[in-house]
Image (cartoon, rainbow, N blue to C red; front, top):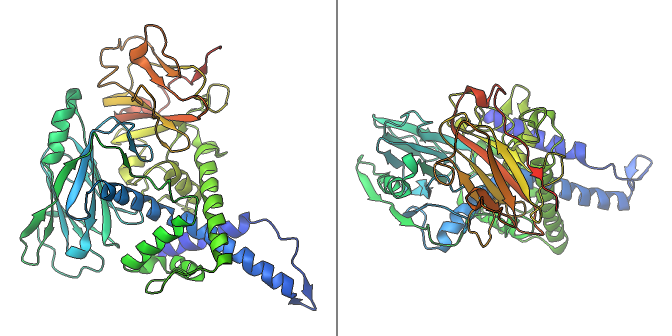
Length: 482
């Protein structure tokens, strides 16, 4: 584990240097740098370091956006947790309306935390403050939907571990619990009640449970759980500094802490960059965000394509690894791509076999390769039946916010459990997207906004073999004549 984090840090640094343009102004006199060269080198090094740091720590700032969104609506870390039947009013990277969600900031500074699941169709995980995987819960976890007690241990925990728990160890005090309750038969109220049945509490030194976190229903609230307001400006570094000051140092990431120290962010010390460094950090936030968006939406990797004759792409490019590990090392491009458009990681999320809990395909282009335009009309043909044991959906996202499109329709998804529950599964299904409803097909239409780009995810829950062996494939988005 420690070696993996060191290699990730070194790989980030090496990639940044490899991508940096060769400076034309460097000059040496008898082998020594001129004063102008030294000044330029220092400026270039600060920018390179800041770009590496931005991309490495982006998941940390992103998950802090989730915590902050809950805090804004009155949900306090370690005291309450939010549950919601989500819709477009909840802003968050590629959230969807398929299932009710629950999220909590677990505060391990108060001691180990227990998540007690009753039997049922839950899909859940715990990620640390850097969106590193800690453990899975529910159907993809060790309890396999049969229920059980999951124990999350704090950094450096050396106490005894009581029997009867599924155990995860975290390197951070703050952790994100994200859990979904599948609405069997389309019964959303029942799925929300199933979330209320989940118990979350600290475990005292005597093995007795502490006070349970109180669920708060945010379904009707406007809630922004993203890092959009920070990601392209100096606030990114201010938020990151606050996290660094609050969390223990993770010895596996020493190289990346050292990089931050060069930029003025160091645990136990005030963050007071001068004007020159402040301008460099602001520039790095803009450039780093833009670089990650290129990885997300304009990748040139051949392995991104789900089918060679379709525009649909895999959202996650490293199958089966929560930390984007390959035999060659950590896939940094895949890491950037995922966190630019989505949140949380788990091995179960990226599996490409019938044992996967769900799968995700990204569609940002039409059949001819042009980006999807919110001012134009499109159709999408979906062969039936879709190879999923549970259900499937198509969700539309705004390309700027990477969140569900917000329109007068107040809907962003077409789902087999709801809008599409009565379709003829013996015939291909046509879906419609654009600013105007198709005559007589309003229940199969998602409204988009003129002047804005959009993309879509196809999700299949309980995917079957045909979803992976290419014997089933959806059509592309087809642009309709004006």
